[in-house]
Image 1: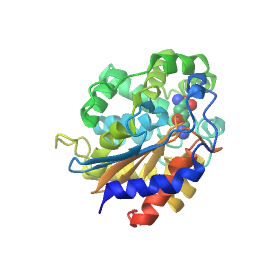
Image 2 (image 1 turned 180 degrees about the vertical axis):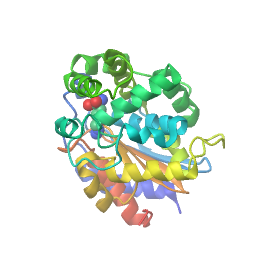
Image 3 (image 1 turned 90 degrees about the vertical axis):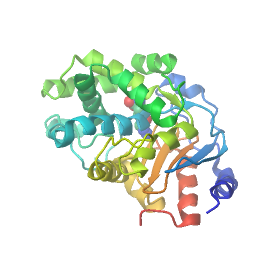
Image 4 (image 1 turned 120 degrees about the vertical axis):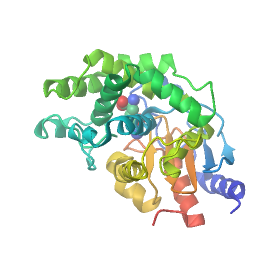
Length: 303
Ligand code: DON
């Protein structure tokens, strides 16, 4: 299959929707990004890399970081993790508070903000340095030693992070946060601020296409755990749009409000697409369209 030719074709087909949607504005530093940008990259399991458009431009990975923190905690904690967070779709927006009270401070899944805060809390307890461990992992997997946090984005989110603070305090009230809430929030805002390109992310999610093996060949997750993370991406990775994403794209995927989406074709490749204009549920309009075009053109979905 000629991946470069396919990506070129996808770019041509998504041109009509480029610039559609709204850039996230609840984190003011993200509102300054040019909405007309678009990039897409594909990294095969054996190290080939292809890309189109702005595929080398770093952007704010935001919730895509939740895939990596989940994998790092699952690798260390195994199934014990599921006592503190569920694995069912929430059907609610990513920053919703409503389910937490009647579900006694146990978030529905690790990808909504409440669940991701629990995971970050756990990664801090397990490693003593959630941020550092995550950055090292992403540098190694992406092969890019300059992957780093964006302090301006982290500060901007901290300043406007009332909903996340509410979620974390509420869960602490149920005994489901182990570390001081301000520390958990700080680590979470830093992880979301990581700046990476489509090329970096397509490579970095390769361990999920390689059934849990890192780029070095070393195992991070068991084959079964890699399957579990992919399954949760499919059912929860795009929040209350996960059904539509599965219907249109048919791949495990994870979006972020920076406009990025990673998707996995098991045994074959990691994909990353980026375009900052979001739909009402926080997913990139051109990003979903591009992945839809890609799987439709190639027949490469998990179905
Ligand atoms: O916590 C937040 O609201 C953001 N840092 C991340 C949200 C996000 O990326 C949701 N994804 N579509």
